[in-house]
Image 1 (cartoon, rainbow, N blue to C red):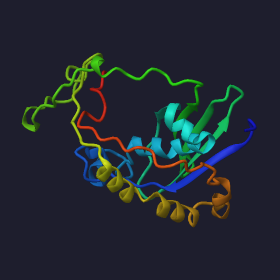
Image 2: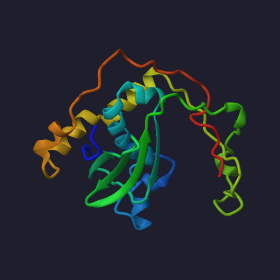
Image 3: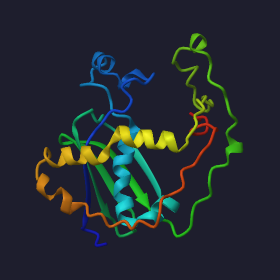
Length: 216
C-alpha cells in the first residue's frame, strides 16, 4: 500500500453502555459533569479504529496484529465518527478517529512477522471486587500507582458475542452514516470489502476475568 493512500471507516457512533454502572455513559450524569451526553465507551472507539488494520491486513491482523490507542476527546451517541489511517514508511498504520471535526482518538497499528508473547495470567492474581456497600471512595489511596484493581468475572460465550453484535448493529449504523456524513456517496467506495472469508474465527468460551486486574 502506498504511503499516501488513506483508509477510511465511517459509522454512526452508538453508546452500548447507557445502563452501565459507570455513570459517565449515562446522559444525565455526563451532562452534569459538563459533557454533551453519555460517552461512547473507549472500547467501542477502539473497535471503530480497528476496522482499518483489518482492512489492510485481513485475518492476519486478528491473529498477530498489534494496536495501541490514546483517547483525548469523547465520542457521543448518535454522532458520526470517522476513522482514517495512513501507512508510514515503517509499515505502521497511523490512525485518527474524528467526530464533528474534533480529533477524539489516535492509534498506531502494525503487523509483526511473528506474534508477540502473550501476557501470563499468572502475573495477575485474581482479586474479587468488594461488595457495593464496601467500596472505598475513588481517591489517591484507593487508586494509587501500582495498586492491583479488581475485575468482574464474565462468561464470554457465543451467545454473548452474538448479543453484542446485534446491539451494535454496525451494518445499519454504517448505512445511517453513509446518508449523513459529508461526501457520503463515496463511503462505500472508500472502504471496499477486501478481507477474504476463510471461515469463522473460533468464539472463545471462558469463565475467567474479561481482562487481568488493572495495574495502575
